[in-house]
Length: 186
Ligand SMILES: [Mg+2]
Image 1: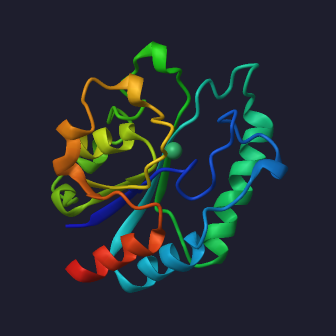
Image 2: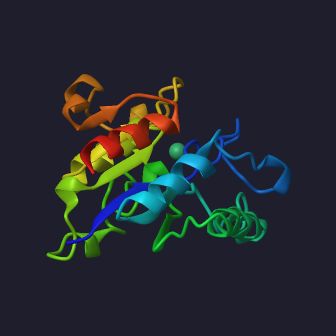
């Protein structure tokens, strides 16, 4: 069975912006040391890397596909060029108020991982919002929480941080701590 790392994009492998919308090249900034530590994780351990991201209103006039995909492809190529290959990427385009199952923490885009082919119990979500922690719960996985102290996503779930603590492996903003934990179990 394959184990997976379900990795968020904004706030996790690139920095979040104040308007939560990466639509120009100038807004792209990579998360500190992510290439080194995620690259080391990719080389040393056997996890399938899966990108899972909410992009609110993508494809609408407020957030058109272009230039989003130009910037997105640049980001993903930068990782691929460093030996960090994502097996798949899942991008939800809805707004929170639509309440769609495809939007994190929903698992509507991730049905294929609920199969004999994947060991979700030993898989992890890596993300900066409490909705990423909730996604781990919904997958039956655990979460490395690169916690954004603005409590982003807190109003989208009906669980408190305390109620989700059993799903949180680390609270650290440092990718090295994710590597260290994975090293301790692999
Ligand atoms: Mg995020």
